[in-house]
Length: 143
Image (cartoon, rainbow, N blue to C red):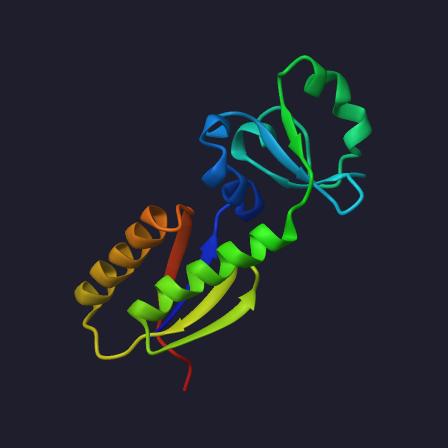
């Protein structure tokens, strides 16, 4: 069996680890030069703002306190990605990063019911520490 662990709204989630006041609020993370929105919370998506929207178009909403746009912090994102990988390594004999917020895990020796419980435990552990929400998908490994 293999698992794909995908961190939900990863850049926003990383910021919320250290800014719990942003949980439940519309938050976006901007590109390197703060030119456009590259990561969106579900709350920000609900406002109609989309990926790639120029940040300047939404400054009036930032000034009104209706949304929060944050600069990218790639050092933080990398450090939290490594924390997620460390937790996954506790649950799997092999973790292969696919991107900063997606990792493939090798699982073996589980019945379907055991695999489901294992995936739930992995999900809960990452949610607890480092505090990132993830989705876990499992499937048989291709021959």
